[in-house]
Length: 378
Image (cartoon, rainbow, N blue to C red; front, side, top):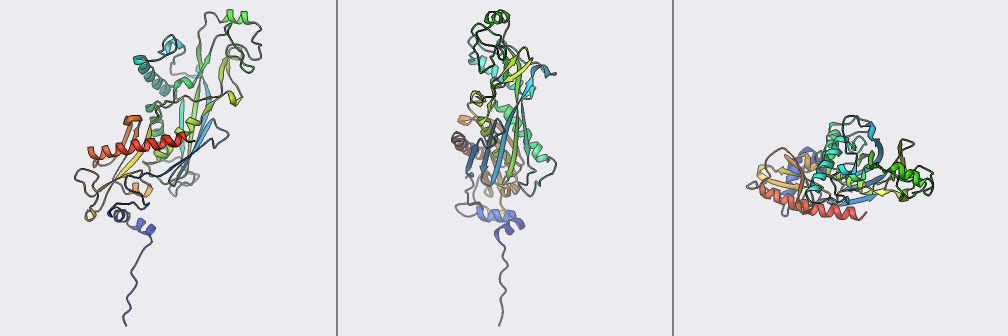
């Protein structure tokens, strides 16, 4: 009697480690092609957003995309104008490129937007920091120093914040406004009078003192944006999808205290009442990020064509960490409303042609709508 040995088999996760390219190719060669996560090549992972999660910040949010979870907190600190040593900034309203009524239209609006972006970069009012050493992945153990991946991702987020103009300078300026006879009292501290001074007392004197003075920017809010990955199922390229969405959700949740310059104390005062805080001014049309990768299947497994004449290439949108690790080409595209491109980052290869880019753009616009709906729902 001949005993036939049982065939040697591996569980799926072992097969994925031993031969990752063959494992992924075996899933994609079926019709319709499916990834190991049961998603189609163009399908993205679901989004879950919860804002206001941290009580000690000015704004916060927790974002979950598939098995990746990110928490972002925004904390505002005050930068006095006199402490800015190397850069000049626009101090008066007539330097801000506006009309007499404060409006901005046409060429004036475009110029002001460019100048705002330059001023934001020069003053360094947005300070993101990304922490991966949280045990979110076996590759990033707790207590380790900042990795090159974390530093590169921090710079990518900062570059996108500046390039998109997501945060408006108007919401970060802290003004000194000269007192006038029309000054009103605001919770014990007036925008043009001293703390504790009754609005009806000394009005003539303060009005005389304020004549000839102009409203002046005395300080700025600096936003420290801390991003912590709690769990991670994105590759080095795709991490920005979750990080950027967490940043947008936290910025939308941010409320800054009413602040003004006090002449006698020679400093900034803030109203402690959260009911009188104001929402951070953001660009109405915010960009959304979508990453994708190109997987080249082994030559005998040719199937779905994503590029021109590239029958063994698969275009995968929103790849997870495993998929990105076997992709020869990765990219990230940031889009505004109506498909306007904010930024494109690309690594490796030249497989994606015009047909592939049109497919990516169409999926990016769909993803943008999904993300905007998720942001509005929190």
